[in-house]
Amino acid sequence: MELVKPAFGLLFWMLISFSIVFFILKKYAWAPILKMLKEREDGIQMALDAAKKAKEEMAALKSGNERILTEARAERDALIKEARELKEGIIQEAKAKAAKEVEKLMAAARENINTEKMAAITELKNQVAVLSMEIAEKILKEELSSQDKQKTLIKALLEDVNLN
Image 1 (cartoon, rainbow, N blue to C red):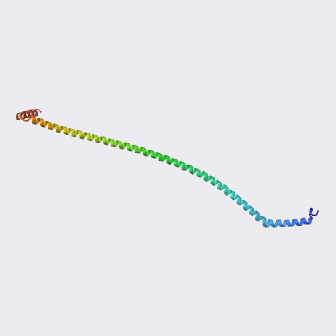
Image 2 (cartoon, rainbow, N blue to C red):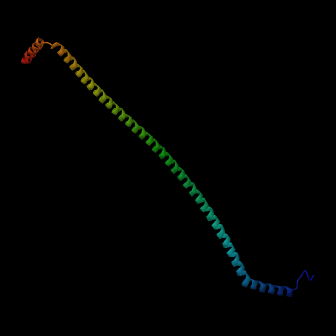
């Protein structure tokens, strides 16, 4: 039974040995162990905080990227719309310019036609006048072939001149 029931002396020395080991451990080992545990806890906490901060930054970057992407799409759409409007404006301007040019050409053609018409009319009048003169000359030569006819015509012309 001695093995099951320890003696008082054994318990006393075991208590003193345990106290000395406990005191030594507390004095020299406990502080560094607690310090290491505290450092490890702080390191784990810092890693968790850094991971949380990184996660928040990633979420912020993702939302920022989405916002930038949305803005870029809106800007692209605006540029495309502006380009289409500019294209339409250029087309309308070119059509208007072409219409004005056609109108100018038509007016110039009309003016040219009128000028040519007037020149043709003038030339026709000149030819009619020349032909009339030639016909009159031939008629007068025929009528004034004799001396008596010439004198009669001169008297009639002189009387006509005096009356006027």
